[in-house]
Length: 105
Image 1: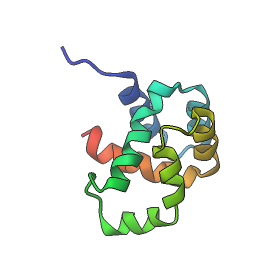
Image 2: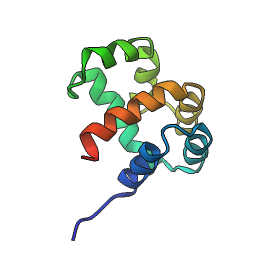
Image 3: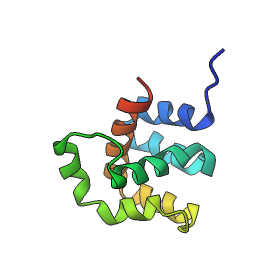
């Protein structure tokens, strides 16, 4: 039996609704810290270079570098991270597409 964690379920929900901003906002608002931990860990691994991504995607994320640092920082409050993701929904969509390629396949 395969054990599926809540963060992977949320990631799958995000990836299925990536084009619907209303659903993404609703999921972000109802998500708990453990549900969204996978997104924050992804930010940390992108910054460290542990996630192999295409240069085209790196260029898209370059303008969000400070935001990625805030999301990866464990000292930043969860509510502040959610507010940042809600404000920068385009960055969040890019992160979801990266996570979808590596974690859901």
